[in-house]
Length: 103
Image (cartoon, rainbow, N blue to C red; front, side):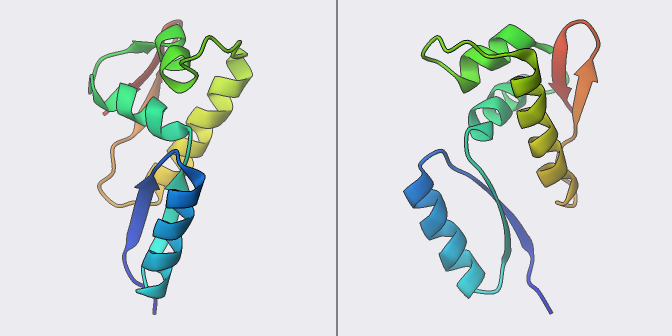
């Protein structure tokens, strides 16, 4: 039998690894999110509202990196899969022509 699922939202890879190992040892099933934590935080700051793609890109890559649309889409897809595995977790929806929203 496996324990409850836990979503770890942490950008620091070393800390994220430590958290995953510690929780795994205690019997929890873990899902870890790195860069996606900034994206998720930006979406959760405005639940139910559309967040523009360029705002999400600025949140996830704050140092002016060039972010291609498919890169953002790939990160959102990973977040959706991880959230879908957690009962009661919010859902990320696409707002056509604008960006994404969390509900």
